[in-house]
Image (cartoon, rainbow, N blue to C red):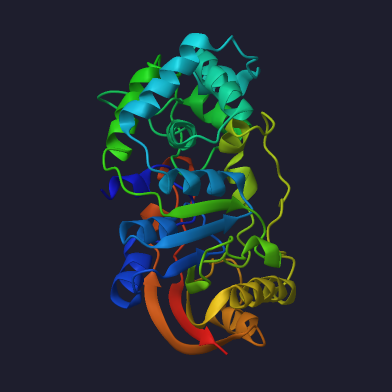
Amino acid sequence: MLALNALCPYFTMFPLSFPLSVLASHARSGDEVLDPFCGRGTTNYAARLLGLGSVGVDTSPVAAAITAAKVVSVRPSAVIAEARRILESEAPARMPTGEFWELAFHSEALADLCRLRAALLRECSSAPRLALRALLMGALHGPQQRTFPSYLSNQCPRTYAPKPAYAVRYWRSHRLRPQRVDVMDIIARRAQRYFAAVLPATGHARLADSRNASALLPRARRRPFRWVITSPPYYGMRTYVPDQWLRLWLLGGAPRVDYSYGAQINHGGPEAFVEGLRAVWRNTARACANDARLVIRFGGIADRAVEPLEILKASLRDSGWRIQTVRPAGTAKAGKRQAETFLRRTTKPRTEYDVWARIA
């Protein structure tokens, strides 16, 4: 039942145990849950496991697509049948060219991937297609397996896409060629692994900016939120868009790295970052019930000489929320933050905190 949470590895992620323990211990039946920085949908999946309604919001198309797949109800057979239907009926699609693409994917796998991409870009609203899209994102790049292929690419990290020039140098220096893989076989095995447990669909994913109040308002006939459980971007961590460029391509982006910051919160300085977070907290307060609770996990990265906890506390001032407790949450394990294959050095993770607040 917990396998679905690992559907698509994502660079920034907190463990399922964090939102699950909060909700299991404190939430009541019928409570609605909000995550304004939903990332890979962990909070929404925790709410679903407990039968609670939820909304996940993120500015990243990758995050919204992963979360959408974690809250739909679908059987593996439906996902497999939809993929097979597309590959049997879809006309050949235009494939990206260049040295990176020649070394990243076997030509037959890339052809199938492009046909699936074209079909999903035309229409992706049904549960099987939402699940298939996220499944493909999770299989798009990762390490080559010694037993049977589980990823479509040449040797790559799982959580982020390598930059083309560096990847080409790496593959050539290690004499690595893309494996010939059976795309349908990878889809079938992953569908059985991640969607075997069929749960009721209780949540929604929105591609939106939580700094806009309308993005967080509950839909008609839904209760105000009683829980906000989230982990906003850490100050200075601005590589979400370029790190996910291959998955963004699958979702309709360009076949090259986008080095813009997209709709991310401004990381130009601590003050601008604090104001961006405060706008989100104010909007969550407006969308919540009077007895709502806000639980935030927050930390920092090693190359920023600012105290993460002070940034978070500053963002909550005059936000509509009042801090109740602050609890150290340990440190993120380095092995879960990046794949070592493409890293030149690792950094020592900083202490993270869980901050609990109530409506002021």
